[in-house]
Image 1 (cartoon, helix red, strand yellow):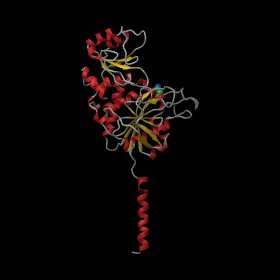
Image 2: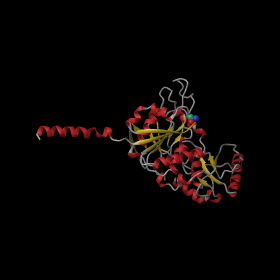
Image 3: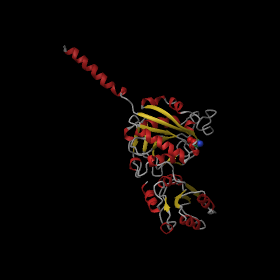
Image 4: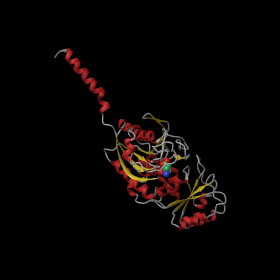
Length: 354
Ligand code: DGL
């Protein structure tokens, strides 16, 4: 065999090896569609805020971003087609079980959930608490419908699939990719209701995703997914937990009404540091004595946390504080935790740890 022939064989072999990455099997990502603005449609391209949510089916969402095929093998399932303000506990459990089932499959490497932005933060936190997988789970929405000029849904969806397909997103809990940011599903909340930079985490994002590459600067500090004591496989229904809003001139009417309707815990969405109006305290103490858990949160937007025994003698009243969780996230944690415990000291531990 001549040297010339041998060197040509080596060149061809090197070219084949160099081409391998392009043809290497791409990660398998499943998109579970639930509705929302990312599936919305308006009458004209100028309608960035006037549109109907939950109209576009998942296959059309995928077809609208052909670049998804560059980062993953993608397939879609239409789990719901609703505006997210209409999510119920039952929707959460159904979605959680589907996500967990897919996460167990060897041919699924990552999962994306497309979702309305109104309650996206609640679903993301719920999945963070109950799905036992290290595989990336990414929840994504958009603030403008795909029919609008400068729609944000296509890039948000591309980023979500790219993150769900990436190895370095494993083990970081449920993530939310909106507006190029990587946020923890635990921390992030919708803080602006009419801008594309709507989602913020009070302690900062975990990082950014830019042109399909993840840049990490922080890691989640609280328990999640594989390190959670809660498992969707053992949950068929969430505990009935409701929220009552605190404000000047508030009375105890809402708290009593919620308890009468069967609430097992009431999240007090308090002013300031979860403060409770003097004329409401007797009712909350009475409800606590009747077995209803009282959990103090704060509706102060943008961060901070409720201090135990600061604004109220929580030890004496046997109340719980929601730590840094906003009222809607506190409801999710209490609804999950109370599938396992009715003990207020156990609940307080859980609020410190999750
Ligand atoms: N109806 C709202 C929802 O489905 C639309 C908001 C959105 O998805 O951005 O959450």
